Length: 121
Image 1 (tube, helix red, strand yellow):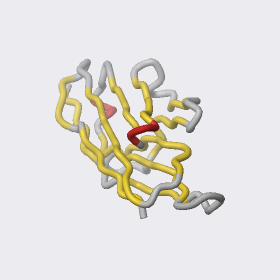
Image 2 (tube, helix red, strand yellow):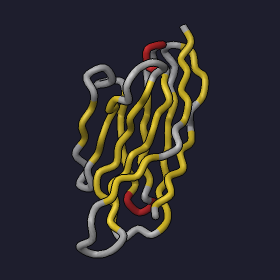
Image 3 (cartoon, one colour):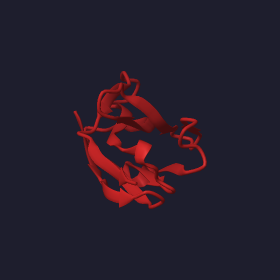
Image 4 (cartoon, one colour):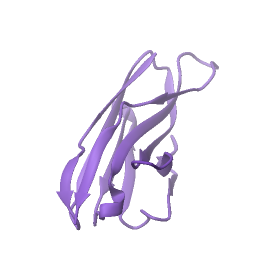
Protein backbone atom coordinates (compact mmCIF):
# COMPACT_ATOMS: atom_id res chain seq x y z
CA UNK A 1 0.00 0.00 0.00
CA UNK A 2 0.97 3.61 -0.57
CA UNK A 3 -0.08 6.47 1.65
CA UNK A 4 -0.33 10.01 0.27
CA UNK A 5 -0.29 12.97 2.63
CA UNK A 6 -1.28 16.31 1.16
CA UNK A 7 -0.72 19.73 2.66
CA UNK A 8 -0.74 23.40 1.76
CA UNK A 9 -4.38 24.13 1.00
CA UNK A 10 -6.22 27.07 2.49
CA UNK A 11 -8.01 30.34 1.91
CA UNK A 12 -6.39 33.01 -0.25
CA UNK A 13 -7.50 36.17 -2.00
CA UNK A 14 -7.68 36.36 -5.76
CA UNK A 15 -4.25 37.04 -7.19
CA UNK A 16 -2.54 35.25 -4.33
CA UNK A 17 -0.43 32.10 -4.25
CA UNK A 18 -0.45 28.72 -2.57
CA UNK A 19 1.88 25.73 -2.70
CA UNK A 20 0.51 22.23 -2.36
CA UNK A 21 2.65 19.25 -1.35
CA UNK A 22 1.95 15.53 -1.52
CA UNK A 23 4.33 13.03 0.06
CA UNK A 24 4.11 9.33 -0.76
CA UNK A 25 5.17 6.65 1.68
CA UNK A 26 4.72 2.93 2.24
CA UNK A 27 5.62 -0.09 0.19
CA UNK A 28 7.18 1.69 -2.79
CA UNK A 29 9.59 0.20 -5.28
CA UNK A 30 9.29 3.03 -7.76
CA UNK A 31 6.97 5.93 -8.56
CA UNK A 32 6.00 6.87 -12.08
CA UNK A 33 3.63 9.65 -13.00
CA UNK A 34 2.49 12.04 -10.29
CA UNK A 35 -0.25 14.59 -10.65
CA UNK A 36 -2.86 16.91 -9.25
CA UNK A 37 -6.57 16.86 -9.96
CA UNK A 38 -9.34 19.03 -8.59
CA UNK A 39 -13.06 18.82 -8.03
CA UNK A 40 -15.30 21.83 -7.54
CA UNK A 41 -18.78 21.51 -6.00
CA UNK A 42 -21.21 20.03 -8.49
CA UNK A 43 -18.51 19.33 -11.05
CA UNK A 44 -16.50 16.32 -12.14
CA UNK A 45 -12.94 15.80 -11.05
CA UNK A 46 -10.56 17.28 -13.61
CA UNK A 47 -6.87 17.10 -14.36
CA UNK A 48 -4.79 20.06 -13.24
CA UNK A 49 -1.23 18.95 -13.98
CA UNK A 50 0.90 15.82 -14.26
CA UNK A 51 4.62 15.12 -14.23
CA UNK A 52 6.42 11.97 -15.34
CA UNK A 53 9.36 10.35 -13.59
CA UNK A 54 11.57 12.01 -16.20
CA UNK A 55 10.17 15.46 -15.49
CA UNK A 56 7.86 15.97 -18.47
CA UNK A 57 4.85 18.04 -17.52
CA UNK A 58 1.32 18.48 -18.76
CA UNK A 59 -1.17 21.19 -17.71
CA UNK A 60 -4.83 21.92 -18.11
CA UNK A 61 -5.33 24.92 -20.32
CA UNK A 62 -7.04 26.84 -17.55
CA UNK A 63 -3.93 26.78 -15.32
CA UNK A 64 -1.14 26.93 -17.87
CA UNK A 65 1.20 29.80 -17.12
CA UNK A 66 -0.10 30.19 -13.56
CA UNK A 67 0.56 26.78 -11.96
CA UNK A 68 3.82 24.83 -11.87
CA UNK A 69 4.12 21.15 -10.99
CA UNK A 70 7.41 19.73 -9.76
CA UNK A 71 8.65 16.65 -7.93
CA UNK A 72 11.44 15.56 -5.63
CA UNK A 73 12.13 11.92 -6.44
CA UNK A 74 14.39 11.47 -3.42
CA UNK A 75 11.48 12.46 -1.16
CA UNK A 76 8.70 10.84 -3.22
CA UNK A 77 6.98 14.21 -3.14
CA UNK A 78 5.10 16.21 -5.74
CA UNK A 79 4.38 19.93 -5.49
CA UNK A 80 1.96 22.33 -7.13
CA UNK A 81 2.87 26.00 -7.05
CA UNK A 82 -0.26 28.01 -7.75
CA UNK A 83 0.11 31.69 -8.61
CA UNK A 84 -2.36 34.33 -9.75
CA UNK A 85 -5.17 32.34 -8.22
CA UNK A 86 -8.73 33.00 -9.36
CA UNK A 87 -12.06 32.29 -7.64
CA UNK A 88 -12.71 29.60 -10.27
CA UNK A 89 -9.68 27.70 -8.94
CA UNK A 90 -11.67 26.99 -5.78
CA UNK A 91 -11.92 23.21 -5.39
CA UNK A 92 -10.69 20.20 -3.47
CA UNK A 93 -7.29 19.30 -4.89
CA UNK A 94 -6.27 15.64 -5.02
CA UNK A 95 -2.83 14.17 -5.43
CA UNK A 96 -2.49 11.13 -7.72
CA UNK A 97 0.46 8.75 -7.92
CA UNK A 98 1.28 5.69 -9.98
CA UNK A 99 3.59 3.30 -8.13
CA UNK A 100 5.08 -0.18 -8.27
CA UNK A 101 5.47 -2.24 -5.08
CA UNK A 102 8.14 -4.52 -6.57
CA UNK A 103 10.30 -4.79 -9.69
CA UNK A 104 8.25 -5.54 -12.81
CA UNK A 105 5.07 -5.46 -10.73
CA UNK A 106 1.89 -3.71 -11.91
CA UNK A 107 1.66 0.06 -11.63
CA UNK A 108 -1.11 0.85 -9.15
CA UNK A 109 -2.93 4.16 -8.91
CA UNK A 110 -3.33 5.97 -5.58
CA UNK A 111 -5.24 9.08 -4.52
CA UNK A 112 -4.67 11.47 -1.66
CA UNK A 113 -7.44 12.51 0.72
CA UNK A 114 -7.78 15.94 -0.86
CA UNK A 115 -7.01 19.42 0.36
CA UNK A 116 -9.38 22.39 0.09
CA UNK A 117 -8.30 25.47 -1.83
CA UNK A 118 -10.62 28.46 -1.59
CA UNK A 119 -9.97 31.66 -3.52
CA UNK A 120 -12.02 34.68 -2.50
CA UNK A 121 -12.81 37.51 -4.89
